[in-house]
Image (cartoon, rainbow, N blue to C red):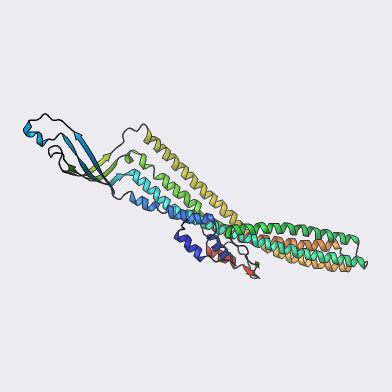
Length: 445
């Protein structure tokens, strides 16, 4: 049976059975997503590297013991008076124990290994933070995609209801002789197109719901819309400031820095200064014999103590050390290039998200104005048709423009929210406060 880590148990205990907000969806995903649960265990495992690094410089104690039974036959050419002192047949049991203690005094290999282990422990926190923010971003996108699909389906169904009304009215006017048969056919065509769009929207909504369910384990999130107070705002800081922060806080950049530090630790290990090792050593050995062997040949007990220092210097290694030094130098150069590449990617990704937020504000405001104009145009077309200056085609076109603009407005509004989360994630600042801010833009009905 798999035993979960304490952190995973705490997360499970704090997770609600259902969620009615983005923050609630994030809480559910933490206990459901396999990748995040695996990241918790990876953090626990890699954090042990710090303890392993410390152990390299602590005294090492080795104990070895044993018990042996033996029997031997030896013939000696001795005077009779001494034969009893040296028996020819000996047998018995020997017990022994050895204790060895060593302490590193100078060992660049251990120093390099310790630095690498410490970097691994620090990188573990970075990796977990990256996994956490990545899951937050995926939950935000899945949440927005599902709400967007719901909104899109509602708008299409509203359009379908309007076109159905227009079709009925066209039939009624045709019966009274106030409309042409083409009005009926145009209305029927518009209704059929909207019906086809509804089928596509239903499928799109089902896909979004499945993705959200697989990510969070939740089936439904309720019915939401943007609140009346929803006011998209541009980024509070300039693009250059966001990029500068991303170059320091982006998890990918920090991870590249850890890899560079780890690679640099190997350089001194393979230079001439790193070859010698000096260890302080101490030891104890004892053996005890129980049997018929005479005291002249084997004492009943023997003990020995030792203390000193051990120096080891590899002089000729067949080119191993120079080769490893060249390899380590090449890995350092590669790590430096990887770090530069990570910073470049961070700048570009932040720029894309920053522009998505900034341009999203302008697009939303422009589409709000366009929607108001489209609705005025729709009213004018309907009035004109009643007065005979506009046709059924004009009315249908005006209505289509209203719903098309409304769908675009909804789409850009959800893109704005997703770009807010992306911008925070790319700069390493995505947290629950950001999710709470996005939640505030919605209302449940």
